[in-house]
Image (cartoon, rainbow, N blue to C red; front, side, top):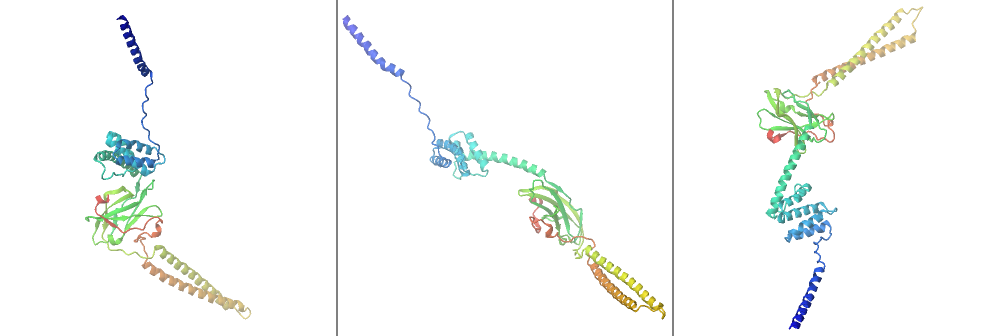
Length: 387
């Protein structure tokens, strides 16, 4: 009996020992390594964008953003590829992640192309994030542009003033200087109308070789049987629109009644030249006449004093006689020329522009080669539209 119990105990111990060996071995065996996360196969920006687009179309949004990031890390990425990568990255994050995470790719997208738009079939969830970022981006950009434009306007300096009055039938001339240190001014124009009229006319000013901006409203427009008032303002603009204005909303110019004035064609200097030539010829003719008289007097004196005992030198008498005749012819020619010159001067006096007023537009030769000729005045519906 006792022997059976011992044998049984021995068998049990042996069995327990045999069972403990695998457990101990298992406990002492090293743990199995944790599988590493899958890594993206290196590829070019074009390949990464194409694969991201394929996965996006297959609705595998969780795999799109890493591929887009890989494409953006490629230094050789093109502009179009960059735009596509930002769009795919933002769209995928907007669907599977926090919408705030999707805002950064869309913001970077706008910094590359501010006018970028999503396709019409874009899901509403993506559109809402895109629209939010677009609104914030536009607001910041508009504020920056407004500040930059305000600073630009501050650099523009207008010199000169509108005339206080004008005369009917005569041109109304405008001349201003524009300080433009950044060289952005593209047009300077005067907007004008007769008081009571609904529309303004626009007169583009031209830049003269002296640097002033000039323009003339012709006398045909100012001619009137009654006095009237002109309302005008000046607009200086660049490619984007008005930069600065003078006389806003308008300055008034009183114009007296008057019919169209015709400019005399002869300038004062031409009349002066003709008168000077006439005077010089007449003075020369006078001098020759006096010299002729003295010569004749001396000639006759020699003839009168000649005697048989002291006869005159025949050759001297003949030479003196010839000289007198030549002087006489010269005096007659001089007086004839002076007479003709006097007639010409008198005629010129009838057509001389004594006031010196320029009733015509400035000649095109006064314009630099890069300035257009003056355009005809065009109507501006109202002051608000002009601004």
